[in-house]
Image (tube, rainbow, N blue to C red; front, top):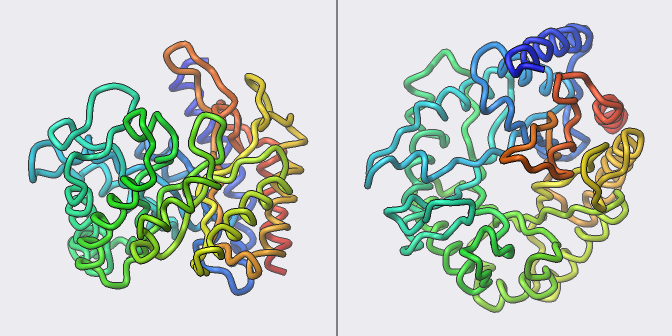
Length: 361
């Protein structure tokens, strides 16, 4: 199907869903949980401003989603040294706020003049403090006293208060092919200081760290972070706890909690990326359409049950809508959507809706 035709189908489909759900108020957050406990990745909404984006955000909010995790691509924003173009992100933040959704930005991917390089491998900046200065620019734009809100009084004020520092630094692809917990701890400390100076109440979130065969295991990476003195630099530890089943995801969170306890840390854990695919190339997360729905439903139930004992800050499902193969390559992560590529809801969409409604009863 032609891309524009697919988007048109999605707008019509989601309009019907939003109209159906509009008759009842969106479910509140689970009892005692933060307002933004339920999150999504929605790269499709980010990439398509206008009617399509607004419809997706409205529908997401109707389900009880109150947070979107989104990369704020440093290499695209700082267009020259000290010169920032935030016009596209202004539109995204504003559209999300109108839908009652806040943002968890991932501060990621250094510009070439800050140490980054062209290609798919992400390199940290040569001077780690540069990332903190970039973060402070964003705080001054979108934080509690941000100029975006004063300049746009018609937009409901939903300031960004949480900032995620980098993504998956225990993988070679996101740390210049050489993951190093001690180096990441230095980046975390250097980035946190300017952000906290700009907003003392800011919540510093570590990069989401996955348990992956192609990266440094968390049983090594997390302790190394603490030994490098990272504990004082963050408020929330984030992991991307993918697992074949909901029970496996909970076990990954529990293992991270146990590692933190070894270092006397009871900070919250944020599960900032997880999901299952219903189709596509094989992998441990491909579980079929009904399996995707079942695992998501089971996970929400388990998180609500164990939220307090594991001190879970929230979770982010990856992602809202299936993606297209790019560069001729397909993989299971392009099939984790709650919606198909043409915008039709999968069983997992209804599983999320029902599980969140039940969890607030």
